[in-house]
Length: 324
Ligand code: PBG
Image (cartoon, rainbow, N blue to C red; front, side, top):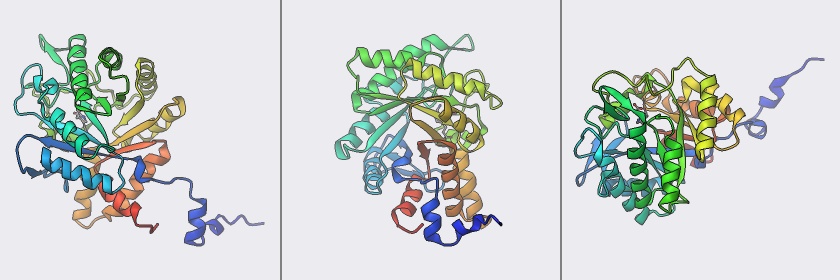
């Protein structure tokens, strides 16, 4: 007897019936950059189709995102001024705080997540406070908690610490509970590697470290067991969703984390992964749309429940036409 696996690939209907992995619009979270000013829609050269938006433009974008069926956005702020402590990060009238309030007023059902970090806000570009040339982990926790509280006050549904300081999830959860934000969730960048795939983001957010690198806080790309340790630790500290970042070079990590934990796993399909597809598509070397869907599928198949991706709108448009 010959076994003929091709029988299950014969027609598009049969293929649909036996398909194992499905991407849903509900799986997608769109990252957006927001800045001060009026009428701003400043293109980000390395991230085609993405802009630094002022608040009014952001609200319009949020309406479009919601109408496409995308359930959530994550906001990254560009402050007016940077200083040693990153004080705009926790200012009441900071850019993210204003943006969250404006979006929640106009599109209340859209889930708004906020990136909680200091690198865009500090003059040295590091994700923590600097003491004698070193990152002071524990001094940073107080500031991160203030940032998280200010985002919760503005109406954020989830805060998302991306700094990789030890103990930040516990500190932030404690502060949220203490101040009455018991319904504000935490999606923690639990497994965040020191990756070169963040290049376009750092240009977009103007967040390059002014000296050294992030290797003393972000994870070594060689380590997989440590990913499980970080994920379990953040769950113990109170995270609601665990994120792995980047996605494509770390599909094995997504898979392993998924197998070990029992809360949702998100994967961040980062700026460099996006830029590579857009740039090669523009040269006509690949079909960007097809490659995008194949990438997102691989992230889902690896085990991610949710995908943060700059492709969210492009993908939603394809998913919303019933063509498969
Ligand atoms: C802030 C932060 C970064 C990203 C998300 N949050 C940059 C970094 O850690 O240097 C990268 C996202 C992307 O590349 O799309 N710490």
